Length: 190
Image 1: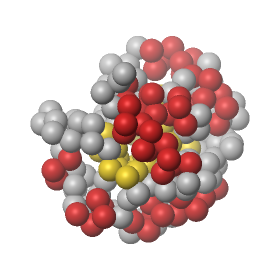
Image 2: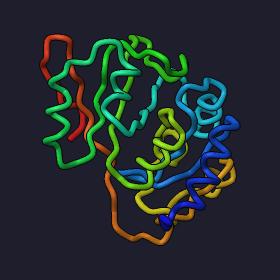
Image 3: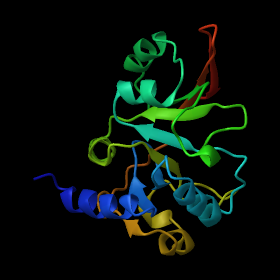
């Protein structure tokens, strides 16, 4: 049995009921919910005190999930992602099947294909993408460790994952790139 199995089960119960979770990602600690549920997404905007015009990242477990939630991804993006070492979020044009309040006004969506075992297992079991946004109030410094997360954020979620809470390794936010229709790549954050 995986060491985080109880956390997976508890997280799934909350996610399936439209709730939010506080969880370790492949980068920093994040607040998550069902990326297809507009009411759940709204809870995260309210908790973070964040404007809805600022879209959030979506985590997926498999390449086929990118194909499911974007209209026409360039196939070359998959080769690019296979060659990246650092977790990389890609902004895709033509988001489909996601909560409308999660999609940017221009129709784009930021998606990261995760490799981290907890996230990958959770998403595969949930069978839907999960929102990932830093576990902080908008405008404040994102926490690099669990102990840096504000009590206001902890009190505002439906479940807090126990796995990796004691970890002291510093994780950084992901790189962010935009894949354009013409196949060019723009690096927005290294």
